[in-house]
Length: 326
Ligand code: UDP
Image 1 (cartoon, protein in one colour):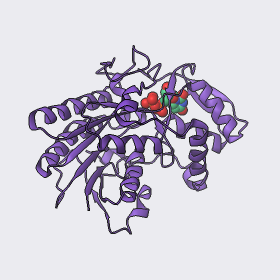
Image 2 (cartoon, rainbow, N blue to C red):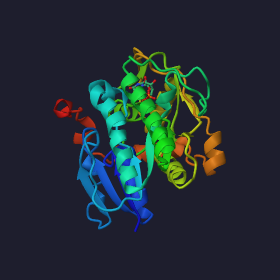
Image 3 (cartoon, rainbow, N blue to C red):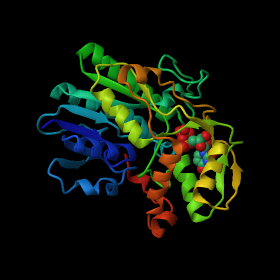
């Protein structure tokens, strides 16, 4: 049985990846320090013999007994609100954490994929963004801690590939949504759906003319799966090119949920990218991959998930104690 380590296993993407690799017959070792992850995302896996879980912070030395065939490094805060609250941890997991996992991969002779992001393109001056674009990042802006950690992560991963001959893969993930997103992490999909379900007005930041392109999680997982088993070592964009303005997206959520709430406008956060749309030509060519689930279907499934949450969960405000994290 092939053994795979998935870091960030209790998070949104990590938990879906655990499900997929369990389904494919792997022995899955999940790792998470639960700063932003939640065990409820993977509690259904604990009864399985081919799943184990380590509560560990990967920015500290990582030890996993036994052989390892693959590592997926998906641990990181991933919403602007989170990395504003825990900037140092965000930098550490992308830099020190990645270094530790590359070392582990080398030791175990395992293939490693790291989760990079469209944020490496910053507030892009090229549209849509292809993998050859170098980006436009403010190193010292509020998003810099995430963006630069991810850029360093790509550099060190390529260095391990070229210098040590390590088998590496780099996925650049664009905005992704689906069940298990954290309701209060500040990202726009759970924010709007949560507001609509609670009967609150939807908060559009800025004038709402900024764009995003939302990919349903199952499509993303399929792209990641194909990339891991391909022989392509350079970064690959995975995302859905269907672009929408945030103002139009708010109207879409109002229609979908049938709420009679209004849109209200709030100031645009600093360095909020104005446009974002993946060029997925490479993924099509190299992986024969493109998204299959359109936004209306994906949002329907996502809404079902948020509707299934208890009243208590829907109304509870974030009470994570980030202060305890190092
Ligand atoms: N946004 C918004 N209202 C909210 C939350 C987010 O208008 O309540 C906007 C945010 O300013 C950004 C977009 O929605 O332009 C996507 O934000 P998100 O945090 O989901 O991800 P980003 O792509 O910015 O990392």
